[in-house]
Length: 288
Ligand SMILES: [Fe+2]
Ligand SMILES: [Fe+2]
Image 1 (spheres, rainbow, N blue to C red):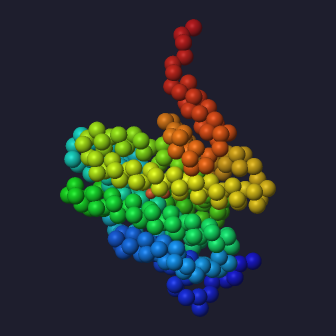
Image 2: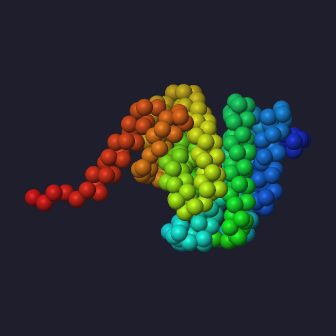
Image 3: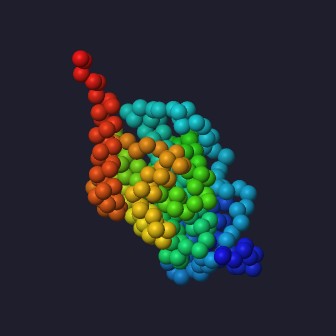
């Protein structure tokens, strides 16, 4: 049994400090605190896995803007216009802001995992903070700021749905939502390059390289949890997708990046089959 919340623990302990960074509403301070925390973890900051922490109000901390709207209400803009390009950079910055929160949440929320679990997720949080900062700086070069465009809240809603289940969190956040980023990156990079924004294209390169590692960490801990619970990882994944209404994955898939991120051949074949099935439903039936 995990120990109950104990106020005597120093705030300099890794999981408590992750919760403090998660509560921070200012996006610059959150990114800076998260990167500092990742460095402190590397330098040996104490970590107490067996402490169950109570959830305070205000999780996650976020700024008043961007305004959060339904996914279908986020306006689509053409990348050929400067405003359209800024909107896409903003959408990516919003994903990375949520990704900081998701990784910090994994650190504080789930007690009694091996210490390496918390060390892994704080590394991820630090890299998400770097991604956010790179995009925020680029947004400023384009004459905008984070908060200028409406955004949706799909990513954090999956965190809420899986708050009580670390297996579902590993299955559906890194292995599903972050893995979708691997699939989307090549097309986004090409769009930026085509529009002449080579700085944005270079940022997408940095993000894709790091995200392979994040998905690999998700795969590692998902398989570790499945093994501990005597679950078949393939069947358990299908069950979790159904139970938590995870988004249906659609092609194109970045098989090469997914393979590097640790998906096995059976999982990649399953994706390839589902891509083929989606293609078939798009092909009109021959007239009889
Ligand atoms: Fe990221
Ligand atoms: Fe990530």
